[in-house]
Amino acid sequence: MRRLAAHPRARRVITAYLIAGGHRDPPVDVDNPLRESIARLLTKIPRLTPPTNGWHHFEEPGLLWLEAVEAAKVNDLAAADQLALAAYQLGRFDLAQRWADVAAATPAARWLRAKLLLREGKVEPAAALLSGVVRLFPDGAAAAEVGDGKLWGLAGSLFVPEISSRWGNRTGAQLRGELGVLRLARRQYTEALDALVRSGFWMDAAYVAERVLTLDELKVYVDRNWP
Image (tube, rainbow, N blue to C red; front, side):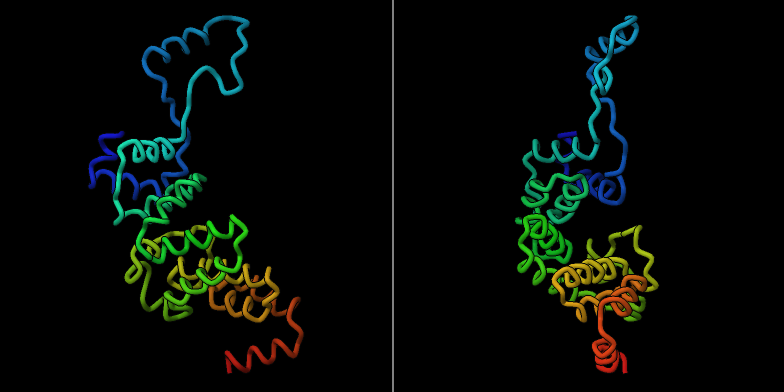
């Protein structure tokens, strides 16, 4: 795997597979031939209680790949946001931070930096960064006209299966939804409603409109934004 990690084209293909869903692959048996034969022998010994995880040694393939990239001392700045995303998906937030720090200021890298700041409790800079990324993506029908991934590279082609937005660009909807939740937590209720409406999260937007805003606040918002 280290040789593949050192090969630019192979590295990008495997990383693309990983961030497109390969990070959900189940753990794989990584026993070498000697340990494998010993593990098989141990399973045949009666009344021998195996360890909690069994006699075999399993690892997540995505983590094995990130370790191979690290061991190959890769310095692929052009694909740094992809490697940062792979590490984030696998819960390796230290590696995600390292790759995000060296990545160009792509929308995906800035999005990840905002999420990592939130993990650290740095809400103000995270909110400012996320707001800036959201402005790069059109909202509503404009996103449907542009289509997924045609302008924003990695960030524009990310697939978020949890989203049931009526509009075309799923990443833009996800970003606005996250911003809406963040603004709601900060008691910026009108701004939260606006982000949720424009992201297509209608149930969440309806909750804020009907259960959080006062009637006067809702009327002012509608008259100002949707005359």
